[in-house]
Amino acid sequence: MKGKIIKGIAGFYYVNVEGSGVYECKAKGIFRNRQMKPLPGDDVLIDVLDETEKTGNITDICDRRTELIRPAVANADQAMIVFAAKEPEPNLNLLDRFLVLMQEQAVDTIICFNKKDQLPPEKMEALTAIYRDSGCTVLAVSAQNGEGKEELKKLLEGKTTVLAGPSGVGKSTIINLLYPEAEMQTGSISEKIKRGKHTTRHSELFYVSEGTYLFDTPGFGSLYLGEMEKEELKEYYPEFTERAEQCRFIGCLHDREPDCAVKEAVENGEISAQRYENYQLLLRELGNRKKY
Image 1 (cartoon, rainbow, N blue to C red):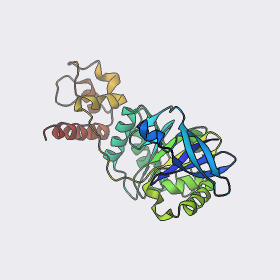
Image 2 (cartoon, rainbow, N blue to C red):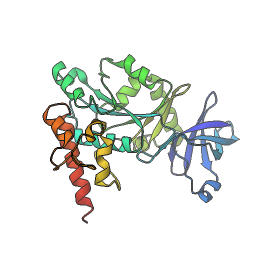
Image 3 (cartoon, rainbow, N blue to C red):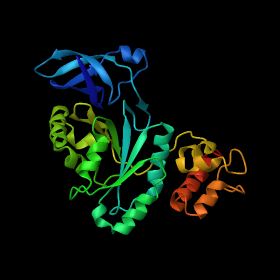
Image 4 (cartoon, rainbow, N blue to C red):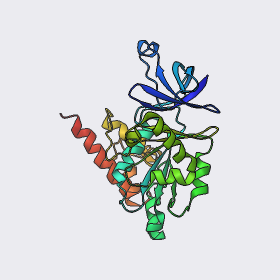
């Protein structure tokens, strides 16, 4: 029987089989020998041990289309990062960190600003304009009043999407707005594993409809850029790369070098000054880290 892992906790994996429900499974020791750990999002084969109790064993992991390291999920088609336009104020440095990580892992990303009803239209426009040339799809919604619901739903249909963002920005409200059945699924799984109060600490995959899944990942307040070299960072800013050939120096870091086309574009308002400022902060962080 074939299914998809929607959650893994303490050695148990919860596998959704379309038309049959969710099975609580253990992974056979063969995976430890292969040094391969099952991940949420994995398509797997299972042997059913008890149909009434919905228990089984995972016998094989199908080939992965993609594998994200941060967050650790398999077979994601895209990521959607959710920030509030206001309350809490968006931490754009944190947002840029996430975008760099997704660019590094070659994952298409949607930037979703929630609570647009709490910000004047001109300020909302200025906020979304910062990411106009970031290579991401950018949209503003209000989960509270349903504004932007249909546009968002079209972006998610037929895909497996990693949903991420800080706590308190309305991720759960968005999920329930788009897919009320997700809340029902959460309740049934929490009842099965008896650990509902801890579920937000784990990545969880919601089966929405055929071919459409949502990963809900724990809220985060910080992101570490791993072992990235500072010389790599500029490659993950699409609005920089198209101008890099015009810089005076090959390998220009777009920092303190003279005749830098990227810095000129910032001064001319062609590249967001906010994006560039965050780039400089991350560049300093990566440079300083290598000293210790």
